[in-house]
Image 1 (cartoon, helix red, strand yellow):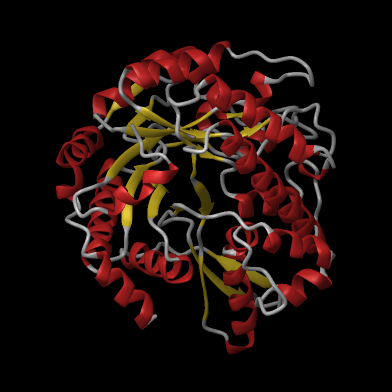
Image 2 (image 1 turned 90 degrees about the vertical axis):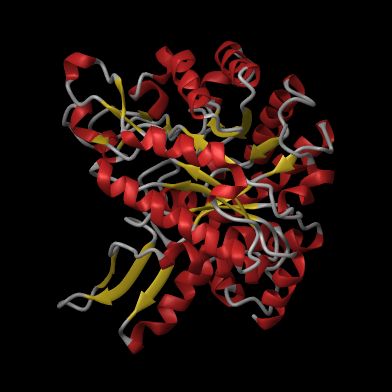
Length: 436
């Protein structure tokens, strides 16, 4: 079983390492205006129909744990209605196969009945009640929970881009969403710990590395980089008048008392999950020929993983885990990223950076988010990033097709910590922090 909160330190022993997988679980329940489409990845990839088979594929890998999202919108389709059949069956199957679930409570979307989504004043209460009820059902058997996956991306799509409810389209909207989301995370963790003090909150966010070649954009790049850490900084009480974003947050509508409330009762960060992809994570800021700000995403080299490992450990000083990574395209390209990223994890461990786990995500192909806004058929939106492909032939009903990545990943899992090398001594980690 995954260690509880009082024993999380054993993951930093030299020979401990967690290999994991996960199934893409984006749930956007609001129909897109103009298409009527929603984005429930479990529905679109037929996981609701194939959950038993898909969890069996997890077991074939031998991974000791898996990130697994639970669909709140199906569990609680109305305020006073609770339907546990799917979640109970899926989590029980994982446990019976000796796979520890790392339960993903909120993955972007909320039940449709929560008016104004994250900006509903009762959202923190709703999410805490939901977390409480689920944790009570699996008390003592499920120890790790992700309160909300990728708070910054959630705030971006809901508050700045306006693609998802509540459809805000400004920096003030982003800040309002970020504060509401983080308050929900705080209330969720408190609720989980009331049920079982041994529950470990696994805080997961998307990480980006912002760069620019334009000196005039250096300050913007620095601000964007600070935004990458904002959710973790808020919930752990690091945002105060000396914080790099304090004045920016205040100028974009953040109430001083509300900001101070996070610092008064900060959450511990027992372990941080970083989501990184060579196709998405590196961001280059520039201006186009008309002077408009643009962000490009050049393909990242292997040093991306090491750079991010140093960034997070030097800032927070806690164990880290790659909670999502993969590449898209050919099997050869995916295998190469697997090799390079695992080697980078090994390099970090040799330097005393406690990178204690690795998750290939998604286990099989996902449906691109553009599906919700688009009109093309489902199979045109498959993004092959997995260990298994989803058959793109509509007549094959998304059959799971094993690729050579399955054997490669199974080999890594069977090697345990030896596949990435021993973690250097705690003293090396302390020395690294002092040097930083």
